[in-house]
Image (cartoon, rainbow, N blue to C red):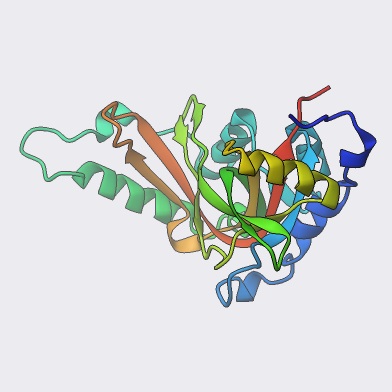
Length: 232
């Protein structure tokens, strides 16, 4: 296990997340040109500290309340999921399709579409990459249960390589855990802007529960990693 209180594992994270999430702040018009670099330091810090270090120019959407507040500002009211289910004789998904198109039209030109946002995905350290002294990262979405429905961010324009680089001291510990076949989970912070033409998608989950799902579609222009420590 990692000794989280040991000074040799403490990383100066303050400002780094802000730097990552601001590095493309002026590229509104070129966000679709090239994917951002997915090779970045692996911070060893708490989720609260990561949240507090995000630069003011980037809006964090990391918690259910932050997501609900953002959705209310952008969308006004949540969908009536019961009314969006298929009715007998209707084409499958027809009601959802019409609802999505109407919402797209209503939010057209909304100022929040140009606002930079940050959200979380989950990662697992996979293979050690010697030339980078870091690990490749397998990733998957975080599903957040809110009163609006399940929020699942959909990142677009992902980097070709996702590699997390720990400090030398932390690397030693992680390589030992990796050699012992321990699963090492990390947090991934993505930043970017909603895609204007199809910024929010409404759907139903495919896990059999048919829960309402809200998928903000974000063009990515910044990536960061952190290994979570308990909040003090």
